[in-house]
Image (cartoon, rainbow, N blue to C red; front, side, top):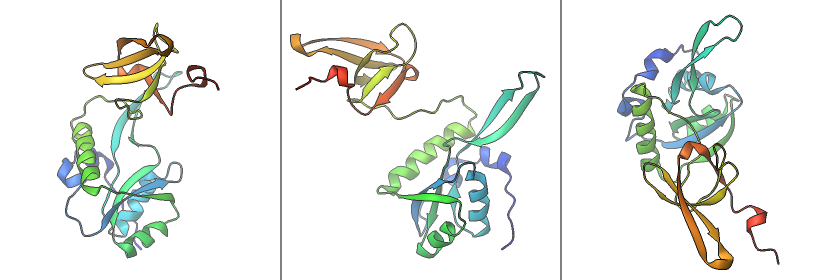
Length: 197
């Protein structure tokens, strides 16, 4: 099989509909790759003719000693790549030995729409930050600023998140607004906020 060289700079600017095509004959899969194998897997899939999408962005870092600026094109979601394949193509993708696990996609149209939104941001060269999804009802902890360590439940999303801090014994609460980048999502309330029985 002939190796394929991908123009990573061209992929950065690709229109969303071209980057994540709709109406393909296979089904979408999420490949959890071996560490630092996202680009190599993309090249392997391209060589096999398997449609795929690897969200990329330009990262600039400055060397502390020399002050020299280095630019590199890196995956947005570390160790993840999306591809569309029939059963034979899926097996050929697994044969690359670059995939640790495959995640099935229950709602393919939703995934395509979400990936197209991501590509629109990336192709526009807009500044962004990656982080876990935070939704209404999630338990979160403030990780920076004067409220660092405070834990609450997300009540609503506006320009900032509204965070509810409860005092169950009084059946009272207070609500504050916090920037989402100052929050980390928790799996549930910490032990100290749960009634011990």
